[in-house]
Amino acid sequence: MGIRQKVKVRRGAAVAVAAVLALALAGCGGDENPKESQKPSASQKQGDTPQKSAAPSGGSAAPAEVIATSQGQSGIVMEINSATRDQDGYLTVNGQIKNTGSTPFAQTAAWRGDEKTASPASVAGATVVDNAGKKRYYVLRDTEGRCACTTGLMVIKAGESVPFFAQFPAPPTNTTEVVFGLPTFAATPIKISG
Image (tube, rainbow, N blue to C red):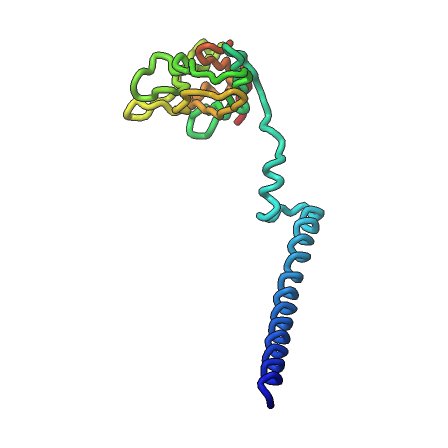
């Protein structure tokens, strides 16, 4: 066999091996894609929510229910999403504070109430009033004086929405509505669930 024939045979063998590998890899890749694209659509029809399809549906999930809204200053709006009484005797209020204005909002110091050290930049000034029981409840504190509430609320950017929570001693179980207050916002009645 001449040199030219050996080179042609080696080239031919290399091309054949490359073609077989390419077909094998294409066969593996082609097999997986249809199965993955079929799985979410099939499971969505059955009502299942596999982990892979959970992320896209989470992005388009409906916003949380708003049970009360209160206007603050400079385009700040507070939305309350829930007020839940738990079995341990606590009432937790959850919501969002939104900056609907066109400039950052940094006047959050009033929200902390009289708090100066343990819970700065917080909603520690929040209160709940039980009008029927004629009693006002303040945000709970831990043994070091820190509030059981959201902290770190320094600046809310224009268009930004930040979640908040505040936890209180729960009013008696026969109290189903309280008035939630946070300095600089109008007090607003809220229904208790749980």
